[in-house]
Structures are given as structure tokens and as C-alpha cells.
Length: 280
Length: 235
Picture 1 (cartoon, each protein chain N blue to C red):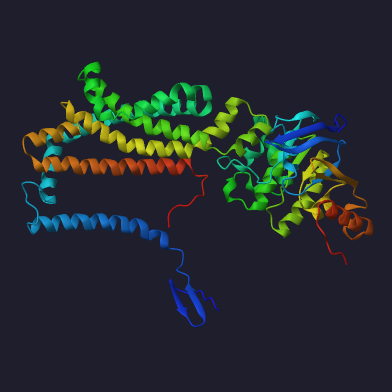
Picture 2 (tube, chains in turn yellow, brown):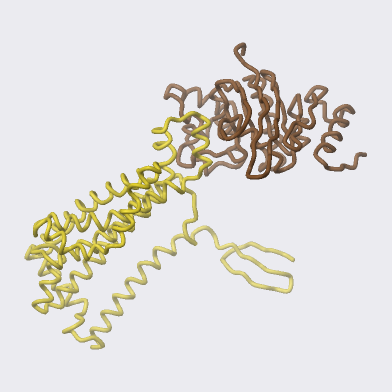
């Protein structure tokens, strides 16, 4: 048997055994490049499909038409208005939902009393789809900003609550014992051990919640609104402006990507101590 | 230290379900002594240590421990989200930080004080764990097989470090281990937990540095293996 390591990556079986060649240390670069490449390929496919008339411009406009519609919307100021309105709702509703989710999740995680009081009703409430609440919230809160923000907050709350709670409960009891041996107060245990230990879980909840925040704001804006991206989409449908509808769809996709990018930056900063598996 | 008090275990019993792990066990550790507690796995060594550490309060009987007790666990149990220095001074006043840095230097980790625990090697993490235990100037230091997971070379240097620290800080030490050689090399007294009580109790003769080849120690070694139910072929 012989194992030889040189040059570029390759593994081959010979009669002497398996030969492994090292592939150097630059392989991390390939991931992101591939990621963008596949996106570009999708765009090219869309472009070709449009030019070759595989898709009908009436129901599935090409990239050119969508781009022009986007430029028109931008120039008229409608795009910026809609974006600003939706973004405001997402930020305010999202903040309310995240703060409530973290606080109640911490309470349920820390204390059995809080858990028995809070958890069952919240689990029951979780089974209610937030879409079903839109008419109720309109009834209760009117047709202004409040019901939209409430819908976003409601949608965001549950993944944050559940993951915070689970995060606290998953903190290794070994660390809690260390804190006990060295006489940390309850507050210090919460601050130094339970909260940082639960942070990875909390962040998973927040990441999930960020995606839900955009979905929920769109739903809220489609059912009853006179502004925002959801309104733009419903309005475009009424006037059969398929290109504008596509602008909205692309906008959602972009917002989702940007939101996730921001999230990743924040996560990387908060979890620098982790040396966990980072993907192959 | 003059205010050090003896550790007293007085008639302690502990059940796990129908299984009685500790059965009316009594033991006294003199201030500043270094005792190794041996026993087959499942014999209740760690249970006794947890009772002394205050981590297990569901037992019968009575234990008396000094006010300041530190533990170094089998796994280093450093909080992965806190820097090495923050781990060492966990739960202490901000003013303890210089002392924490000093203790890290004492265990040879001065340059690692800002590092994340997950970047440390097994030996380094165990050193940090020792520093965390010692920075509080404990009167009783409980060591729960802290060298078990280390490679042979690292273990030897940790043994030396442990002895140096014990001499410098003079805590009463109870070392839980299943390693007879380790017990004989480090301790001045070895006790064996058998059937829920101390079934074997002996002073280790001779000076630490030279003792391992001495006939009296070899004899004790054979007795210890016998008490642990292991037959060893002796040359």
C-alpha cells in the first residue's frame, strides 16, 4: 500500500493501493462562484425562452419587458414608495415579533412556571395560520398600518418563540453545573450561560422569521391596502400588467436574498466562537 | 493556609433507583492533603465527588466541606462562547481579571487568554479548566478524571503541573481516577471505593519523584490492582 500526495486533486486506484493527490487550499472559492453562475444561467434561460417565443409575452414577459416596467415604476416614484411602505411594516412588525418571541421564549425556557402558563396557549395559537387572522385584525384594528404590522408581528413571533425556548432547553447541563459550582447568581447564569448557549437557536428562529416577515407583509397588503409592494401586485393584476407583477416577484426574491445576506453577516459576528461544520 | 478545614464525609448513602451506590460511606481528608479516589467504573467515585461539589443534594448522611470548593471536570467544560480569560474568571468580580491572567500564565496559557475555547487543544483546554479552578484559591480542589482524555505525553506534563500547582496553592485535593499509576504518582494517599464504602485506604510511601520503582510502592500498586479486581503479572 502506498499513499502519495502531490499536485492537483485526484484519487485513483492502482495495484499498489489508493493514490490520493492533495488539491491545495483554494477550494472554498468555488462555492460562491457556482452560486452566482447558476443564477446567471437561469436569467440566460429566461432571456432565450423569451426570444425563442417558448413563453407568451402576455402571461410570461421576458427580462427586457420586466426591466422596462421596473424602470418606469422607479422613475414614477411608485417603486420607492411601495418599497418604503413595505419595509417599514416589516421592520416595525418584525421587531415587535422578535422582541416578544425572545422575551416569552426566554421566560418559558427559564421557568417551569412560565412554561406551564405560556406554552400550551401559545402552541394552540401557533396552529392558527396568520392568513386567517387578516380579516380579524382588520375588524379589530381598522384598515391603517396597525393590522399589517400586527400580522407581521404575529407571523414572526412563533418561530422566534419556539426556537428561543428550545435553545434555552438545549443548553448543556454541564455548563449550568459549572456555573453552579462557581456560585453564579440566577441572573448571571441566565446572562453568561443560558442566553449565549441559546443564541444559535434564537438566530435560527430569527432567520426563519425574516423570511416569514416578507411573506406576511405581502399577504396583509394584498387583502386590504392602498400602498406597499403587495398592493402594487394586486393592482397590476387588476389591470393585467403582467410585467409589473413580475417586477414585484423579482423584488420579493431580491428582498429575500438581501435579508438573508444581512442575516448571515450578523450571525457571523455573533457566533464567532463557533468552529462548527460549515458545509463541504 | 491556616483557616483550612478538613473535609468530612459522614455516613453518606446514595441510591440510584434500587441500586445503592454509596452505602454509609465515611471519609476524612486532612487539610492540604492529596488523595486519589480509585474504583471500578460505576463504583460511585463521581457520585461522591458530585456530592462534595454540591451538585448532588439527594443523599443521606452529612458532608462537611470548606467554603471555597473548585472542580475540574472530566471534560474541561469551558463555555465555548466566552474567551479563555472570561472562562477563568467566570462569576468573579471584574477586579479578578489581572489575577485570572496571572493564573493563566501559571498554567502556561498566557498568550491564549483572548482565544476561543474551541480553538484550544485538549491539553490546553484542561489547563484553562485548572486555571479556572485555582484562581478562586479553593480550599478543596476536586479533580474528576481530568486527565483521562489526554494523550500520554500531555498527561505526564499535566501531572507535573498539577503537583506544582498543589504545592503552590496548597488546597486539599481529591483526585477521582481509574488509573492506578496516576494515583500513585500524584497522591500521598489512595483510597478505593468498593461496594459503596472505602474498601482500601493506604498512604503512598516514598518521595514523589522517585517512588515509582521503589519496592514499597510496587507492593502497594499490586495491592491496589487487587482491590480493583485486576490481576497484574508482575516481573
